[in-house]
Image 1 (spheres, rainbow, N blue to C red):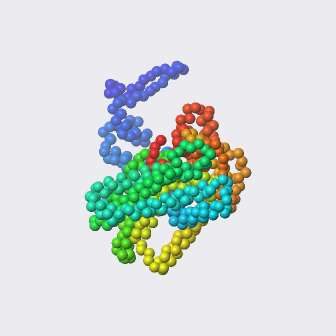
Image 2 (cartoon, one colour; image 1 turned 90 degrees about the vertical axis):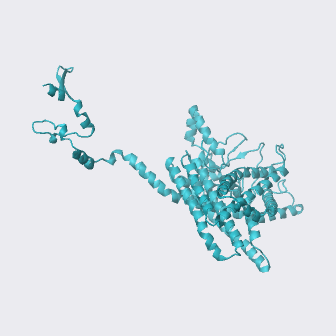
Length: 554
């Protein structure tokens, strides 16, 4: 009886109704068997109702249970659906990212071709207007329009920096860099990449300050150094940035011409280090937009650097076409590594931060909106300057360097050679015009798909210095049915001059499309003061238009 009591015991107690309730407690000897999953059903009991002993539990039964046990994934259906959507998002990232990169590449190409094609013609027209000023008279109290003043400043800066680049000895720089060790060159190349980003970030501020100082209304109180100091700062910046890019191209040229290609391999592996510095950080949609713009600018700059390297190498080999096929594998390796790094980086950033692949369509629509808005009557900036601010791509230093390399590599002699140069120039103008037309048409389509047409006809939000721009509610909704002809209309007349009493900082509506919270969120913020700190962090992203590093974390 004692053994039976040890196996099972019955505790009898009375419930509230006076009935006896029997509770059977299993001894601790069967505990391990139950934790291993050996629960016996009624069909496995021995005759007489007794359970099997522990001696019947064997290794073969355990293996059999492990081989035949099952589970049902539908019990956690939401989790597995989420995992599957993440896989599909990673598979969609390369296509969506390359569509954005393709569009951004042609935006940079359009701004770059503008410097070689339309800018000289605009400068010429501005000089003609200045010369014929006594005959035509003043219009609106200005000698030149603000856009014409900016064009003349750009042209003069490029001419001065071009002649200053003649004093830079490329051959001496090449042999000086080639004499360094591989590790030292690797460090130099990394330092040059960081310096290029810093120069691009601060350089556009210098040029914008020069443009505003030269075109600021004279009746306002002077609160600046003057046009001449700003002009010398702009010349110094463009010259130093052009030298920096030249050192980058020279280092890449040394890597191409090295015998064992070890330096080129190390430089390409440096791109994969970028994955480590970006993937495991927290990214919001605005931070990812900044990084995408930085990647577009970096890819376009690398293409121009590869063009410079090929020109210098072809010159050294007397323009032998066979040498071009020697450079072709290395060029393809550089381009392929850049594309692979961008795809992997964006795929894992979107995966870790739960960002869908559709966000790249929003980024493309925002870039298209800036292109379309620069063609409006109330445009407050040139299109090339808008690309410079958004992507950190400043075409002036790169254009100065390319002109210097081309003029030193290609010798023009004879009437036939000058005829080819003129035909090549007209070919560039044709390419620029065709590229602008296609880009404008595609941009209008992207803006229409994103339902941003009504924002084109809203006045740009302004704010006084030191205050964050705020979104102004739309008072007129009648512009929602805007046709494509109204959106893509190119304005050739000068914008009307707007009188104001204080200097204003203008922000494009494209920033509000991505960064400004909706009206419902603003109402919640006003009702709950605890959410004001979160709105302030979003406003910081609104005014951060010159960040090109792409990995700033708030």
